[in-house]
Image 1 (cartoon, helix red, strand yellow):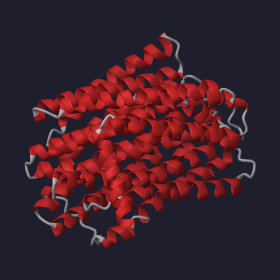
Image 2 (cartoon, rainbow, N blue to C red; image 1 turned 180 degrees about the vertical axis):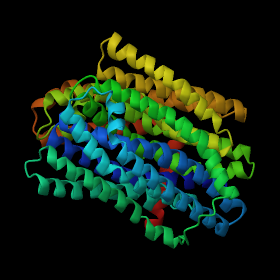
Image 3 (cartoon, rainbow, N blue to C red; image 1 turned 30 degrees about the horizontal axis):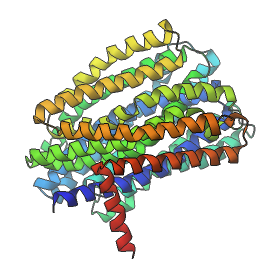
Image 4 (cartoon, helix red, strand yellow; image 1 turned 180 degrees about the horizontal axis):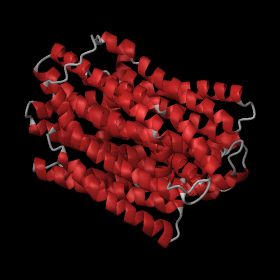
Length: 533
């Protein structure tokens, strides 16, 4: 297979994952929109989001971060060197270990929920709000067990080059949360008071179970059959745990930053927790579609290249993945920053979500957008360190980020008086610092990382972003200036026309400037069109 074929295959797989994640993210937005419309961005939604953050935090720490990266790296090498049967035996051992360990963590989380809530909110919430948060936390703790197993299944399928179904699995979570959560919440309290939040919490568990079970048919098709295996004294298990150790420590640094940010936000009163959460979720839409999709496809490829010692191929795949992330997230960042208020108004300003809530959330989104590009490239760059055995590097860099995050939060939030916007800005700056440090260290290890080609491509992408920014500016001041008073459908139509026109202009300019990744995308669509004919 030629290098051009490899690029097209990688681009095609990225497209499949991107479309699946797009579906999930859209459903996630609908989920957030429904919850915000029912409860507004205030006291009750703060309680639900903070309760969900606790199991979600440990899910990021153990499952979708450290475990997924360590397992895919080891599992891919097993397939490449020892074959499928050895890889399946490792999968059974890790699945059994994960189920046992996460069950124990879930039980401890339920028991110590009051202490965890106090830690996360710095004890600054009222007793009734704290009590509600503790109840919701205890209900949602088993979500972590379900989603940890779902992440493990996703890792197996990705290593077997099955990307679409596992990427679609998170759509099942959102559907289960919306349908089950709203139905049970309405049954408990038709007026959607605080009691109905219990229904939303139960809906989270329904969605988590669906996310896991929905991947089983694809897993069976690739030949996997689960058998409980408690023989954990195995070289493959040791390798996964050895890789996980620094990854967990590195991710724990990120979660410490989450705890710090949550404490700062909680201390600002009712609302900031919800404003920041909604803005971050909107920023995660392009991050998930592009950054996660590219990282998901790139990790198995760089792991195999590293396993067979092909440094040139490793370097090429990694550099191309980062350039593709730049191409897709720079226009997204510009659009989110310049169209923040219209976007949030269209999606969220319904029911109990007011215009003032839109304004406050838009301020956070504009600052989060600054870090979008760095977040996306980190999704590609960070796992590559585990593929080459440099597992301590992300850990050290992440710990340096804790001090930077704490200082920047204090500086922007309290000293400069930026409030919750300061928290969003410091988060973006920390992500940018992380990326620059890791890029320099990876370039030092690989001796070269196609830096000149990347900088030239980045310059062309920035040039293509200028007409996009101009279109957004014109739309804001000439077309969308009255967005606050427009009805929903005219507002939606104006926003969609602006986004489509800006995207066409950007990619047309990038194609004219001969950005190579644009040509790869076009080649994928051409091949699909020829097959369709």
